[in-house]
Amino acid sequence: MKNISVLFIGETWFYETTEFKGFDHFTVGGYEETTKWIKGAFDNDGFEFHHIASHEVHNKFPTTLEDIKKYDLILISDVGANTFLLHPDTFYKSLVTTNKLNLIKEYVEQGGAFGMIGGYLTFQGIDGKGQYKNTAIEEILPVTLLANDDRVELPQGCRLTLGDEKHGILSDFPNEWPVIFGYNRLIPKNHAEILIANGDDPIITIGQFGKGRTLAFATDCAPHWASPDFCEWEFYNVLWRRIATWLVNH
Image 1: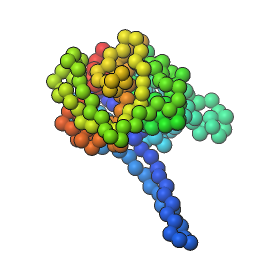
Image 2 (image 1 turned 180 degrees about the vertical axis):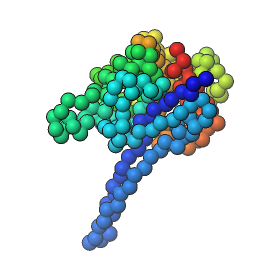
Image 3 (image 1 turned 30 degrees about the vertical axis):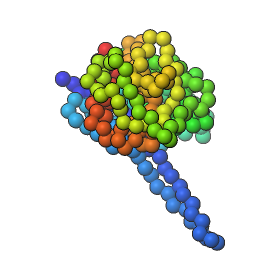
Image 4 (image 1 turned 45 degrees about the horizontal axis):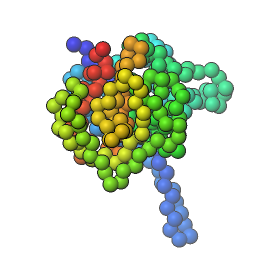
């Protein structure tokens, strides 16, 4: 049986810190990525995991339908719409380039699988800087996005609880899940399936668009919204593998 090929984009960043010590100050910087948990979920028989860092989207993300169809599932986590839309050739040279969000929509319409994972730069995110509202991505997602900042910050922690009726993906999952510390507030569309919610807010939502299936995972796949207990949870890998399998097998 063919392995499921997963293309994961995001969960990377550069940082710069300036320290002031009396008269003097200096700056240090570095690069971080938090893909080890999601990579671990797909690092086994039956899956192939491919990763594109946020700063490499402009030169590594597929630009043709033929190339994007080499992957069975596209997952975007904590990287904003501008990164996909503003190729350096367009931004600096005013040249025509591929609209990657429209390409993802076409890919899903023709049977591809897509998921967006919550964060400060996905859905709408902090100060609305995710900028996915009114894009092709909002069209294909099983949820409607808020117009502005959509974060729900929960420093006290929140334990998600399953109801009595469980989707097959979660059939043998415990009712009480590890703590999360936040998520993006989303509005489920008609005919969307909510797998788990916090009150009226959907946390995991799945749906259909064209011939393909899509996912809105409102919380994170890594800290800080996803607690260490969540990321190291015995069902974490099972959750992502089952979600991926459902999205692809339609």
